[in-house]
Image (tube, rainbow, N blue to C red; front, side, top):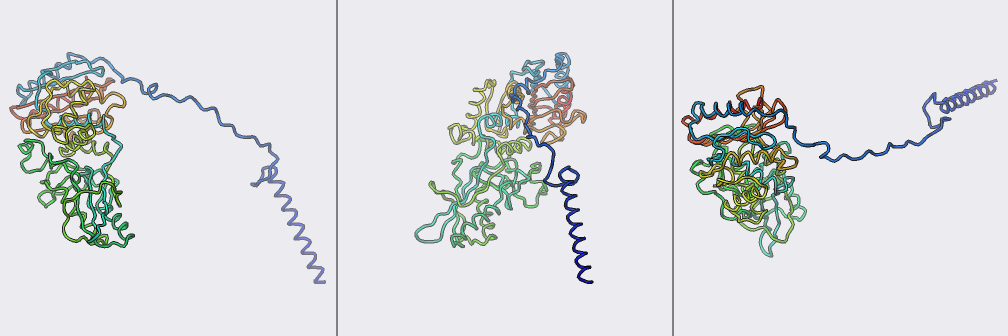
Length: 474
């Protein structure tokens, strides 16, 4: 009896299993349940024919001109500027429309001291000539003498914004970190069984001419400039507690004194980082030369040159401006000097048809006394920045009034914030601004204004702010 019941259960189970399986197979075939079986006809997918590629020019086109600028209104703005408190008689200004036509001007052909607006010339020449997507690499070489300890050589290529910590990908200042470099070097050394070395540093990149003549007349305490160098930490700033260090390393709006021995300072900081990474450095770091036919065992890279240029322009960093001038001189085969840097800049300007009448560059930054140019030269540069693909790194790096950079606090009309891209310039006897403007009636304009020897330079600066704030409404 038990065997019959068992056989019956087996038969029922088998029948149910077969029935369910058959049902699922049927459901799969007719698409009722998921599965690989189907009675639906399969057709291959055919991608649509590729459309023709549009050339950038056919999309981008030329700059919108907008309505014509009223010459009467533009002249009225200049007259208001000329008669404003503190301006005095040494004033030049110009307004041009998007086609480059001068709409209104005052003393446009008179050469005056431009202060930091001179940086727009250096930036234009560098951005037009250098590979702005490249980086400045700091490298470590290993030299193993026949006798004595292995030697490391630290070589810089112009990164004066090194950090002491790990690479900081969120900022320009500190993008390349000495702690990261030391960790890489230590790993390479330990693979070779080396735990103790000596250290030298190669700071020969910019020769012996590092300081523009007379620059200390406007910077006696080394707060706004330090001699160009192959390497520096944080632009050579010395945070001794006299001023508070900003939390944002890209904020260059406070001015501690700067070291004038940045390469040896960098080497000392690197020794500290090596020690933390388990490598003992015997003795003090000394000046030396990197091996000419050897590959580095470690390196770190700065931000791209385009990012460094934006940092330079928005912070009006004089050291970085001088650095760009020197990199340009080396690229163009000019003398490795201040004079070579300014000659290289002037050469690019001439080649590109920028008016250099009255131009004298005492340096690449505008900090040294003696530089002169006309507002026409400044607006020639700004016109180039409005053209497609010309000096894009400079065009993108300008300060924006009321938004970012040295012009963030220069807004006289908050409703115009974001429409005006500029470079400012300030010395004890000079205030200047140049830039390009998006007009609220469409199109753009370029402008420049320089005031020297005003009767009240603070009031003169406010007058410039008022003048610039009205430009988008022309």
